[in-house]
Image 1 (cartoon, helix red, strand yellow):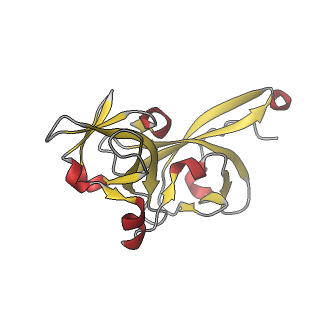
Image 2: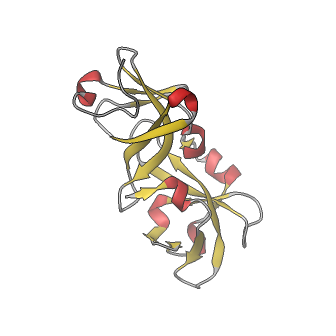
Length: 170
């Protein structure tokens, strides 16, 4: 699995030319299918933000993301004009995680992608402990029926049976 926080700042390099296209500044996720749509590129050859569609990613390595070539990269305006709706993973951080019956499980701390980088596999959930002095972390696997909404991530109650939340239940 790849943590999005560990992808941020990695170089994006073209396999065709070896040229550095910029750095990963965010990851775009489809809120319905929970699949990666693309990588937001900041800096480098491209001074304004651009998007590398996930289909044009050759590899997500330990030290860099490798694009098939620079030709797949599109400008932010062109990306929006394509009508592709997606959420930046940076906007998911600190979003509440609730069960469908309203029980709080904590907040999103990070998003974990599968090894192919194409799907959200889990969320790292954090919750305060010891009066907010410490934050406990737990991995919440992605489950069917999960909703990534504008204000919260909702998880079916039955899918968290047996899951250890980051804070003890009172």
